[in-house]
Length: 205
Ligand SMILES: [Zn+2]
Image (cartoon, protein in one colour):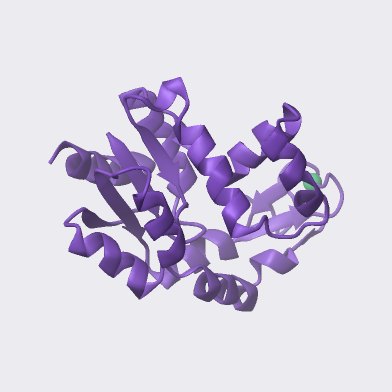
């Protein structure tokens, strides 16, 4: 089973991909993981990617593609894999299409309200430096140490909304997979198991 999971930050994509990987015994592949592995193992491609990663810049498309195709050619991908978040645009999808035929593309849809609720309730403790959530606070203070909490810049609603807009899956990408008859959308729920059940139903179709 060759799968691609799409969805915005906060939709639980990584968690779901990990469960699918375990249950179907197929590797969970994300570009972040591929980059790190190649840099750690000092591969030829890793050496090329390293300078970009160190500078916090995007790894160029053609290099990313080489890294992904190299990863997909590995033995453990023979029976399938689950791609997490790549390809994320039409150009990447077309390039990938030249080397592999995906079986299913599943987009986890989530309303902006749920994401804002999920990410917007996160807080950081200024004292013990641990993340927490407004639901856990005791008298408005950190439940672990009683320290003052604050909202990280990344967790502010405006910033979350902005990031969501930037990460939105493009219409062209969806159409590309729809035309192949392999595109499915599932609605995310607040429970990991329930969301997984919906994904699993699509996989088994
Ligand atoms: Zn604390």
